[in-house]
Image (cartoon, rainbow, N blue to C red; front, side):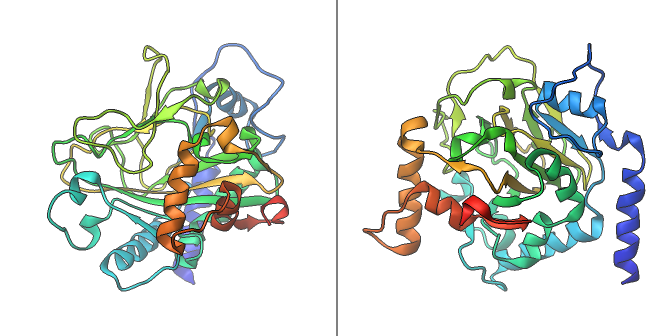
Length: 328
């Protein structure tokens, strides 16, 4: 109990410092905000920063004890000590094509841990949720969960993640009531493949995505934006353990190659307002995602089973705070 209280005090003391949120000066002053809701948490300048750039980093938001606990549960899953229903375990395409590597080194990402409470604890972290309310309001669904274990690149550059927009995967709207929380589980640098963002691209629209034509292949579901202005400035988000970035689902982002000898870990959750409405993805985005999801369902349920994207995402979602509303 004392240790838990100490960690809580650590987080609170960091957040009381106004320098806790990383922003940069912006020219001019905005008074009408589209991408954040009225709240007492963000200052005017912080809301301006997100409005202009589509992301904001909160320093030291998640305490070390929680992160170490998530790391331990990840390792137990990788070793086979824990079996999690409906969990998706992914391996890098370079590892998949080589000889088997046992344990944690074989796994580059786990997804859909929403029904495993020790990891879903991250999604219900009150320090995170109070920021999520600024984007989604009080009724919040956790719609996509990941723990990423970016491997050392074997020289194939397959450890990178192509530039993309997360909204490409989601059959619910409005986009402005969706946000991702992405927390560094250790020091994240350009060397080990930090996130890269194109500030301001959340003001655009959802672009066409496809698999990039990389010489050594690309990981499953790692789509990339097909058409964007490559001259736009990029920002590399180097972060310390516990730092958390919140970003908009239309913001173009990706991550670089891990050029170190260690694995780079991060944990993340996409949140959506519970009153988001569902759309016909095949009409608005195209058939690619539906085909990939049909394959996902066949592997887990059996051949001949066809469900809508809306049903799949309703199943993958779990209430993080408040009421479920449209995700029933």
